[in-house]
Image 1 (cartoon, rainbow, N blue to C red):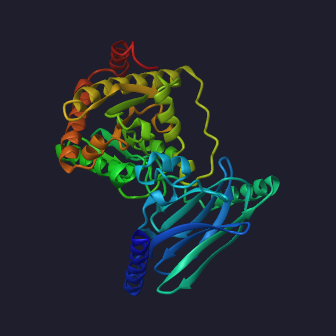
Image 2: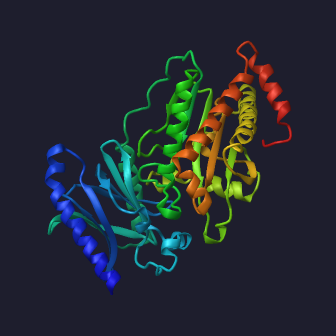
Image 3: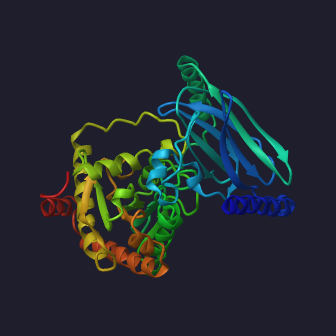
Length: 433
């Protein structure tokens, strides 16, 4: 009873603070703050409600494969624990919510966050065919409430609505990508903090959230590389926004990047608490093991998690020149992966199997050496303590910077690319694809 009263008290305090800040935020043009979210079942309807400082207008539509309801909004500052929208399966991974009751109704789980500057999104995973009854925002005492109302639908009606939703999303997409950048005198290093915005990534112990952990590490690494003045450093994202997987690859290719480093952190179910340490992944047509396959499958779902409609990927060019380029690129990727594990272990723990490979979409640029660094496991107490420590971050990012320096020191500017790639291939004949 006492905990219930405390929760109610906190809710009223939050509402009061929201009311006090609403006028000031409106005057300054700041995005409204969302302070709470809940789902409920009323008769045949399932409702998802967000408490906001002030009303916003939104657009709701459906997508399939997987079945989702999408709510696109102007930018909203979501001051809400992402775990509130977890599914029952995800609840079991979280020590904070291990004893939560199974969810019913049409909502399996939901996510929310910034999509791009000026845009936010709510993504609702559905348990079955649904129809959007309404999306309304109305004032409540001291605040406002945005409510999405869903009702059961037939499979045929849902599929028709989802096709219309896909067309609507495609029509609302932004301008075409920028043209290729002018050549840089320095090697271009693209640092890719995984996830972001509406795609939170893994949720771990002590409220650790992957999208923030990896962004902090990426910024520390970028600062060290820029301080050396040897490279041009570009981030796929330097803020809490979502960038589609394909666009991350296109950024590297447009810039003629010399190296692409994607930064992530994993989390396992409760029985994986003892799994720890960093892992370096390269791309391959066949996963090196079941765990690598699991990680790749999860990471490749980032676009879906952010509410993006699946798009047909262009097939690989099937000619000898393309195949040689891709083989050389993968060889260089393996060389850097080996160097990265050697340097990283000086500052951090490595997983018992620290070099693996799988079909990561974000590593598939055929002409940019690419690796994905999983810093550790947010489901492990020791790893979380490290990954959220500024001192550890400084030490570990310094080792990644040294690995990058060593990688480029080996690639002498007067050495023909084919010869150096051949040497790299011979050096890695026993590892990966």
